[in-house]
Image 1 (cartoon, rainbow, N blue to C red):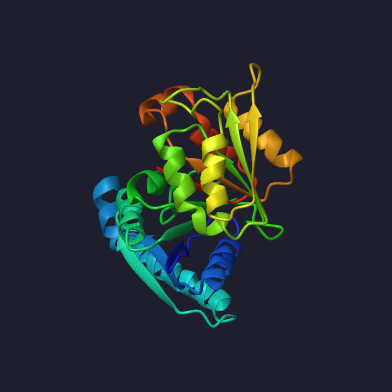
Image 2 (cartoon, helix red, strand yellow):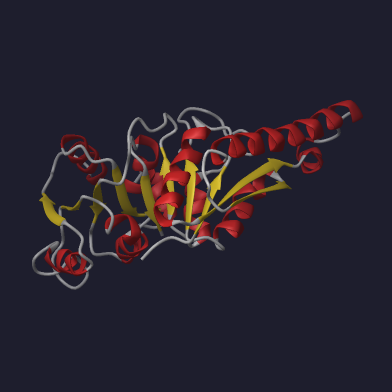
Length: 280
């Protein structure tokens, strides 16, 4: 299995050139086509949201939108020109509220989306993607790169969160091109539930057999914790084992419940320190 079409979102969050570089690394490994996408905020739509604006302000906002596209394309070209990859750059102007919809639409024509983690405690700037929205709407696996950047290669030792759910099964299948190329894959089950609605009678055994048949070098880690939440256990074990990439099913509980009470997906989107592939 391999990825043939990869989409990377080019915005101004964190260290965007490293996010593009991560997408390049994946595209080179799979000899895939790489598309860069930048969505700029529409100043005319902003006019309807914020109320009347002077012509000077409107012209300034239009110029900012044009400049953001130009910066994004120069950034993409600067990174991609070092490679011989098949590539294209796309740009679109949309209302701020519709930016994630535009990204999701483009994502549905790709095998994998690569974008940057939102910076905590910072307001969303016009033109920047919200990873959680793209994960939910695109129907595609989304690799989220830490906003602090990547200090070393990733995908050599991958940790996969496994609870037997539809979302975790989807994530594992979507990540198979990574898993088959990894030196090692650790499947972690935190407080596993046995039975047909959980991970089976021997948690992790069945999925380990499945991965082994794909020639994945896999081991299973079962964790029981009463003090730490599953996301805390995953991050702790990832640090201990020198994990360089995570794979997780996203929003296994209703989204409203996650928003109100928190959840593994929301916590890891905020606290991740290595590239993390989410599927919903």
